Length: 336
Image 1: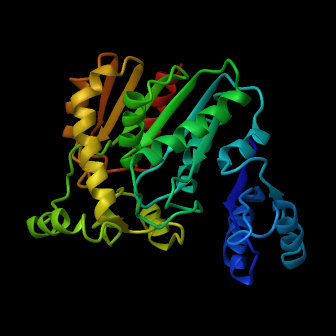
Image 2: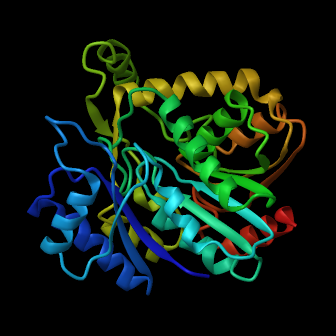
């Protein structure tokens, strides 16, 4: 399986400040023994974005020698199109949607366990996460997440015309996938895997914060607070938790409006989850302190064609926890 470390940006005009992102991409590529690619957006106007994509690439190549740059081929393209370069002969496709504060690079474990399964894996960084554009932990409307998934799906389907596509979402990503399946009613999705979905919180949000949020979401919607996630509640694997704590692409922010948008979507999903007709795997760790395992109990009563699995003693990320071998056995069985 081939790996590509990818970043997308406007870079108009290119500056020395872009060197930090470029250096990070190349470091990740070296660590993963992967190739790298920086794709420059197609955006251009006389005032804010004066240079053409081709001129931006030319300047960047002079400024950062030994770095691979490419101009995008349309306005606001989704990075996933570039990953079509990696496709080969696969029986199945998985699109991975990560959780709050993390990024696609934390899902390399899928590559490890599915390497012999003829599965093409597409993992993306949501807006405001990882290497994607956007203010960390903030989004104006939840629909922006869904638009992102839709763009990814279009490009993946172009490269995999007849291959069954499975949508995988973890935590916030799980909620996003559920919302997408309900609101967009895409016929392109063959099945879904929903991991520790954000339906009911396990951690307690202080009442005073809830009160403040309800008042200030209309006054200062983009104001961000800590997401209050305890790193040691992610898994029982200390090495995984330590890597998370040192990961420069991870953030711990959430804005008032993102929290508000999430709660609106939770209500919508609980109201309309019976619209989801595709085969769905719901799994959760029994000892998840971040998102209550009652979340999959709720969903299992609403989604008709579902399989629910509770992994005993697993924490918030069963696919990264000490039980991950068992988790991937179940995932592989579901996919086949």
